[in-house]
Length: 450
Image (cartoon, rainbow, N blue to C red; front, side, top):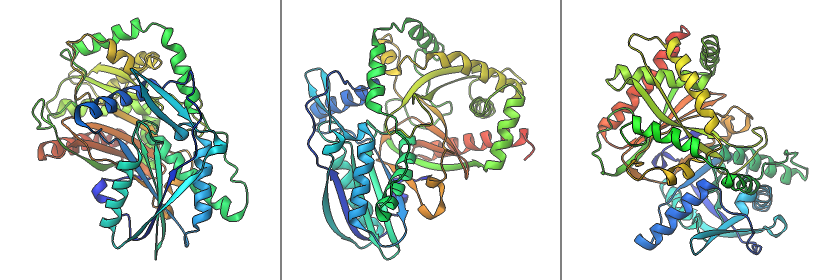
């Protein structure tokens, strides 16, 4: 699965058909509140509606290829099967005063309504139609979170799923490609898809909220000290991106390869031999790169941690928390020493994974700035071969955004390790991000002699 810019999404051409969830929801579930990260997204959308009459789009769009002519009936059935498996895709929220109430459609009530959107003569027209469909169909308040589409043309069929970030993280898109393909194939053959029992995000949200009675004083103290050391703010991207404070510009995304899977195996072995895991190795290489490019010797960032209760279960939902990580780069230190420092810092902050970052942010002193906080993500996506099969041409993109900060997502796949960068679309940021990627790759490949 490749991450691509929205402008780079080659959607193809042909006849476009869309599906929306149209079954009847149950009465509000009580108690079934949103997870903490969902609540923050809902609060932002509700505020933007009042202040702007609209809300910022935060959707992701997955695309993958099916061989042969489209069978609309079996595909519609497969999409419904997929939604039945994942409770968050059957959830919608309504605002009632200062709270958000979840409504969940029972699996037996799931049905899809089909929309025939006509012929898209070229990829640009198809992309525009898909963006409109995603913008209108993934409202975080009042609607179900996803819409589907299929573009059928002379070279086969491309299936699309657009979903609001409120309900879906990046790993969920990998699950979607695998499951929809298998469910469609099973419907064509009249067999069972044989998929494992999925994780349930509604149950996860309930379990997370059950811990709200637990105090987070120790975690808050750690976060506050972390922010104070960074200049009374959450850390921003460690290199100058050429955007003035308070200025927002269009953000762009870029996929930057780091190394192939054989090299990644060698890097992982080297990290273990030198006292660290793969993620601390990446962080250590990033910290050394920042020093070389004239940045601080104190490396600080926020790293996301997966919160899926069972990492092996295919689960669609937003299962992410953030924890702060900080370590220093001593003058003259080599990668081996910095890896050990990054590993120690990682082990220390891993204990904070059960304190939702959204709770912490609400409790932080008001003088601590939280804008442009930068995240450094690592995700191992090697589970399952399907989404990486080149015949499927799987890729994912996201809605356009403005901002002034930079973030990186490093994803390890069967085809290699890549750095997905999001940064301001200005020359200084582009140069900084590419130098950042080059330094990370250079330090790690030099360590293993490749």
